[in-house]
Image (cartoon, rainbow over all chains, first blue to last red; front, side, top):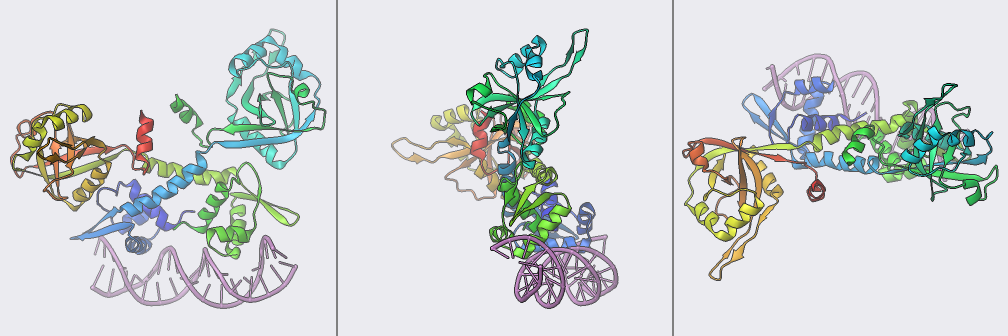
Length: 236
Length: 236
DNA sequence: ATTACTATTTCCCGAGTAA
DNA sequence: TTTACTCGGGAAATAGTAA
């Protein structure tokens, strides 16, 4: 994927070849990068001509060091990627309201769920869920992305008669403004093209919604990095 | 520098072509990247074959979106660069001790300098500086790097009779262990191949140093990023 | 307009080898 | 041992053009 030039610059930077010269043979580098000695030699010459590295021949060995310009090249790329990847991402799910069978009311009403939602999601939920049938392929794929990132855990429980599954929530803005959360139930009879939304208000009432009306939920993902947990831990 | 594939992936990511499809023509992309429409077309096909992007033809326009795999490709590169560039850097200056003309003692003894050093550098300086004649080209280049990064400012002043120049310090470890600081005087008659070190102890005594003895100072640079000020501000 | 094919050129990689 | 040259094969970029 990366060109040999970049691989080589990265290898040199990784080897600490900045702020100090290092003696490495072209064949050793070639072995590390999985390429030929000749290519390394050729590219080192090019990098030197472009001012990315400095080479000094000292007796038998050649000392190499990255220049400021060479490190800047990597820094620039880093900054570009940082701006892309560390930027909070707006995820929008778009779809149409539809009626369920009242299970939303039933489950949210259970005190074991209700109290957990109140405490962990941060609002007192209206007793019911709004079902949204997703419209586009994008929204359906984004639903999967959000499910992965839903980090508010609602634990399942058992009341002796039966067990109740767990769920995962993520805070969202209904129609881009109203505080809400998407709730992904562990056990659901809906498919991947449906999301259920909870909110501290009666959404159908506030927005005068009828089945078939178009709505959307917006979620801000803080970072797209894999190590979300690490980053979250650093935040405080 | 970057291969067209990477440029294209980055361009797509920058355009927000993740989490949503976007309609862009190959010639528009080509224009942005400074390449030909044919190349963009070819590479889009390759990226799709490799699973980095998805293309859907909708009527006249083609919708493009980055896949998870595509974004992962950028994330991996980002992580590699982050590990290189965000890692604290150890800078070592190596050289030989030599005697000055006692100006070190004179200047450090001036209460205006002495108090600033005590407060800003964080130790009560021994009344004198240790002069080090740098030996290698690396050390001399590193001296310039450190001078750029020396962010402890000692202000100049005037006592009516004459003016005294400002200086910049950076904390260092003398011989890798002893708390010290390098002081870069605004007005110095030494060249770029000399550094002056201050410390809370008499270094010549502690290390039994005579002129010509080899010593080194180590400085840990927190990051090699350009925006040192921003980062320093975040540190607290 | 668009995308993507084919043909041509240009560039890159690496084997062989000299110094 | 090194590094770096030449050169042949092949990949990548583009011009021309079809659909």
